[in-house]
Image (tube, rainbow, N blue to C red; front, top):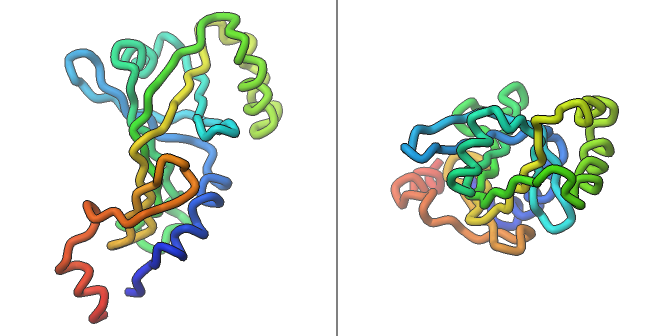
Length: 176
């Protein structure tokens, strides 16, 4: 197994999200009961992510109660070289629900329309749904076994993530 360098990982950082259309959302309620689902997403020029979800679903209640989510972007398993080593990017995120008639809605709706075309034409009919802003922090980018990198706050550069490596695993990679 060949070790992935930070330089190689850096080249993969920006293009990684280009082929991913949905984000996995993990939230907890006030009793710390977890809930996970997914949603299509868009990203703005500042690196914030946005989803459009019903205010009746569990994620909406959880994010309103805690203001937090954990989000993950995951490589499709059909293109992965190894099922245990799917490429992925994940973050802790602070969440914010848009109020009805929020002046930012038009801009975010335009981003969705640009990315998904007519598939988002139903937005205006979904009166109980809202945009949620997901402001990412504490990110990681995993490209395979022993290849976990911390995403710096600028969201453009990586650094080694020592939490994702073990010395014995790294030594095994060097031998193999």
